[in-house]
Length: 85
Image (tube, rainbow, N blue to C red):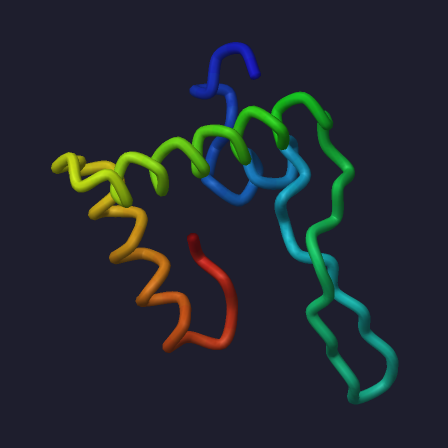
């Protein structure tokens, strides 16, 4: 990724990695599809592995503030209409 300060907001970083949602628009229809995968595959794999490690640490029962934060964001995205975590 290099220096992440070059991204002005989180959406630009998501687009660079390729985890931003695709949007299909036609007339009055707007559909949010799966992730775009336009970014680098290696960064998506690293992100996926990091999230798996966070979830594994939580299952073992070790206190982990990162896992708690991730779960909090995941729960808040379930109530919203789009994925935030």
